[in-house]
Image: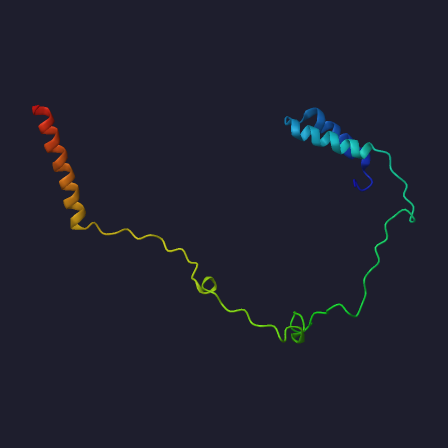
Amino acid sequence: MAVGREQDAISQCEYIENNHPLRKIKKQAEDLRYIFEAPKLEVSDAERVQIPLLQSDTWRKPDVRRGRMPSRLNKGKPKIKETYWDKAKWEIVPPQVKELKWYYQVLWATVLLAALVYGNMAAKH
């Protein structure tokens, strides 16, 4: 794991444990140092798991010319019908600022006039 420099890795982990300001990093360095200092297990070839390679002619081989499976495998399959969501445009159109129409000005003037009239009536009573 340390490519032949286990002692350097252990000393670096100890340095981080003693000097790093974050407790989480110190804990990770301590855990890593524990792994480096653990005794090495001698595992024989008989104790290792052997996974045989599957080499069979029944596996499908890709068509090298086209970069996909041979077309004979796709024959007889119905084509999928295109749905609305496939045809929909997924572009986001930014909202456009509407021009200030006359009725916005009339509405604003009406609200302002109503507030003035209400304020004058409330002041008289």
